[in-house]
Amino acid sequence: MTDQPGRAPRRDVELTIDGTAVRAPEGTTILQACRVMEIDTPTLCYLENLTPVNVCRVCVVEVEGSRVLVPACSRAVEPKMVVHTDTERVRLSRRLVLEFLASSVDLSLVSDEVKGQMKRYEARPERFGPKGRPRLGPPPRSPSRLRSTTISTSATTRSASSATSASRPAARTPRTPTPSRSPAAASTPASRPSRPVP
Image 1 (cartoon, rainbow, N blue to C red):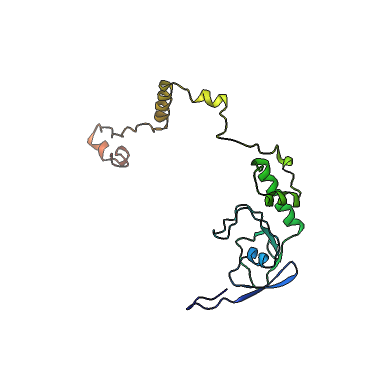
Image 2: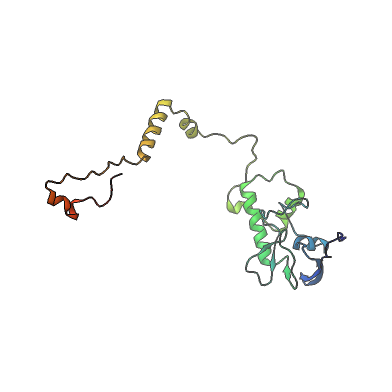
């Protein structure tokens, strides 16, 4: 990588990936370092020309000292970082992500790469329900939804007006002071209103 004029050169960061010492320029992601080492780290939402969005969670790796698995597509390498890309915990996480995805979405038209990932991680989406069915066009409307959309206009108007009046607070009547019966009663503090009437 060539440095741009006027900028300080990027330092190399030393880390360990799967037991191998690696040097990578500062700001490099774990995924980029893995690809340079030819370590196959699967991705679904990552493209080199886009900012990582961390949504698929298939690229997660284990970093020593981190409580959670980290997305390799967005986590930058750090000095003395120790990364494991194929532990049992990583494999389980990737398998679950693929199973959840395949149980809710039709994957019949996915690339061979994704099918290979399903096989590699032994994903069994049927554990979470039937496979996602292919859909051509919008989802069908159920009869109950059709019935609810044919409500008459007058019923809609009535329910809207009753909902509006129910949500409106009751009108407040102003407090009026009671007229005093004698001049002596008017001077006592108990007969005066405690605050002015608006």
